[in-house]
Amino acid sequence: MQIYFSPEVITPEYQVLNVVDTKNKGVGNVAFLFAEKKLYVYGILEDEEVGADFRDLVTPYIKGLAKAKPDLDIFACLYVSCKKIKLNEEEENS
Image (cartoon, rainbow, N blue to C red; front, side, top):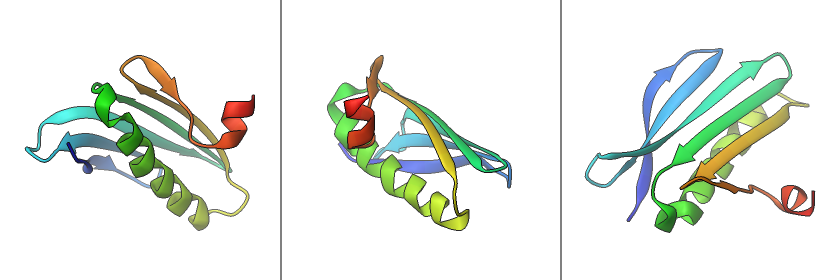
């Protein structure tokens, strides 16, 4: 199953994106909050079988947002079916 972002609300301070499947059924959501030099990311996905796809969808999106603001500190908390997922190797080693 492929998943996509479907914007719910986008402002300069925050973004709320629905995660939908190919039938436009909501399977999760992700929120981005910008605060000075910090970016907070919170997301949850219901279906464990697309967890890797969720990480692959969120990671380049965060990297793109980070390019807009140099020296941005990113704090991410992402879950797939009640299990926390890691975006990079640094999280895996901590």
